[in-house]
Image (cartoon, rainbow over the protein chains, first blue to last red):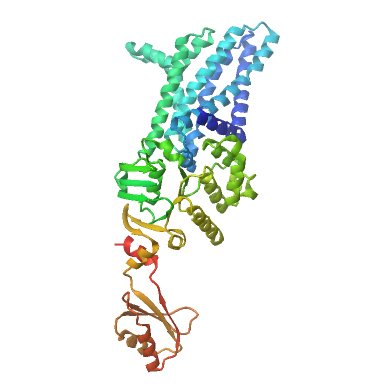
Length: 236
Length: 310
């Protein structure tokens, strides 16, 4: 636990010492704000629903951008060797880095709360779905970040990590939208695996433990794969 | 302190380390000598637990690197070859972070960082970004992070590569100082380094140990020829032939040197034969004016060369 905290602090500081955090947050806010308010004024409803339609798609790009450097950079520069000469377990390293990435994502998401405040001045905003949406988007982002982390663990090239992470995120986003093309018996399976499907459940304002359990086990599973990937490095 | 038993490490089909067994005792400064690609770095990486042995076992102070990596890592300080460091951190912050992860209690960290920055000569760069540091300073930061938790064992991978001559001397003195209380293993292909710092040398070639002993023991194993350099104030064609006819002379090589009016003759003879007197008497009897004569002692270079070629 102590080591996770040490690594977490270092990684978070490294995000904010470099332009990464600022670029990610700013560009995300620009894009989401622009896309959201374009639709918002067209629809003329005091609702944030369309924002929660935009964010899952934007996160397909932004999550791997956040995670791509986490381990790929350490491997490229060789600092991983020093990191692993410290008395920390692989899982400490992974958890510390993952939580730092998650914190950056949560901070970025929280920066959109003023949208809600502004809207609530214009018209009656139903905060139930908004809170559900925020909880859901954090879970969804956490799932994406775990995938991005996995690709960063598997390669020492940040670009490769980004592109592969993007592809994986997209796959788990699109999974419940291509169900008509799937064989009948597998439909519920693929629907269950889709990150976006569970997000939509939560975003409706109904926080079902099944969805939460799905996200937590999805993250745990992906992190386990990452830790296998790290472990396999030593057996090269 | 460190015990390596039948260690083999393969990268796919390539065998980097081939069945090495080794005991390193407390207080030794062990030099790992070998050509590039001999398996020095791989062996060090296996000891740190960064790589797992394909076959064999490595224990550090009784703890197995595979079964108990945490314990092993606690007693080791490691400086990798190209001293990779977090470029975006300040030296002080980096050392403070390592101190934290190395379980140094919070109240002792500041003192410890001051001590170590003193030892490694980092005092003036503590508040610089690591990316701004010169190679020499980066190397010192590498050493500082490896020693901050006062480990019993220090592993240094080519610690002086890329440093200027003054820095090399400084680092060597530092290593010697550390070696008085701790076990140090350093890898290098720079031979004077070993002679200057190590109490024990292991020459490794193609993944196998080919020699093991103190630098002096290894020197005495050398079967290389003794070379006597001679220079005369005049030049006759007959010199080389006459020199060759002296007893026990195996070969005479004439070397023309830029800036010298007369060639230098290198007389080769077998080890343990002292023919200097005979050579001098020859010069006297022929009335040649001898300007210079010195014999080249067998060097680790010769031993190294002998053991690592063929």
